[in-house]
Structure formats: C-alpha cells, structure tokens
Image (cartoon, rainbow, N blue to C red; front, side, top):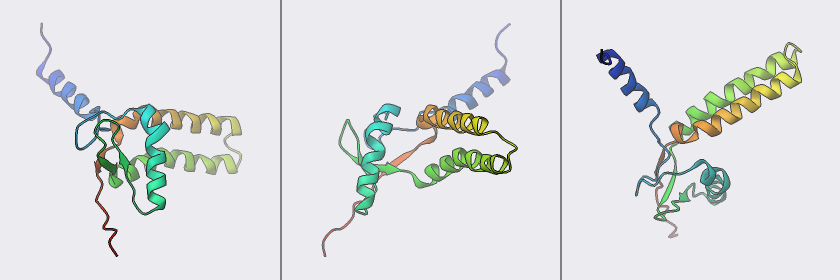
Length: 130
C-alpha cells in the first residue's frame, strides 16, 4: 500500500519543473519577486541605457544579468496571449472588460511564476579603455 514507482517519477518531474531559478549565479542567493519588481529591473534598465545590461546581487554584490534565452521565452509566453487577445477585441468578439481581465490574469501569472522561469547569468565585463 505504498506509493507507486510511477508516482515517484512524476513527482520528480514536478520538482524539476518548479525549480527556483531566480538565483545569483555567484553565491546562489534567491532573488525575490519583490526585489526584482522594485529594484532589479530598474538596475537593468539603467545599465542598459549605458550599454551595460546587468544588476547587482543584494547579498554579494556580484554583477549578473537575465539570461536572454529564458527572458525571450517568458516574454513570448506571456506576451502572445495578450497580443492575440487584441485581434478578437478589435473585431468586437471580446469585450473590453474580458480583454482587461485576460491581460491582468496573465500579468499576475507572470509575477507569480517569475522565480521559476527567470534564469540569471554572470554579466560580461565591458572593456571601457579607449
């Protein structure tokens, strides 16, 4: 009357799928949703305007940046339903309220899933010597 072997395999798949990926690549510090949405993305945007897309770990100070492949995949997964929802809304097959609720639900899902779908990598150092 124990758990079957198949159930153990499925549990392992779930654990791997729900791995906390938003960690500092240097020290392993977990980057929280609060940190990213209040400070992290602002650091990335400020540095990107100067050609240095990176932010600093709140624990060790190491510079890192979001992994581009994971960022593009997450943006596509969250952006596609919002964008595709514009078509039925434009042709009045979807009410404005329904479209706003759909967009809000996708935004909330993105915030909740952030630490599981966002990977970070060590930022390459730019040579500023001219």
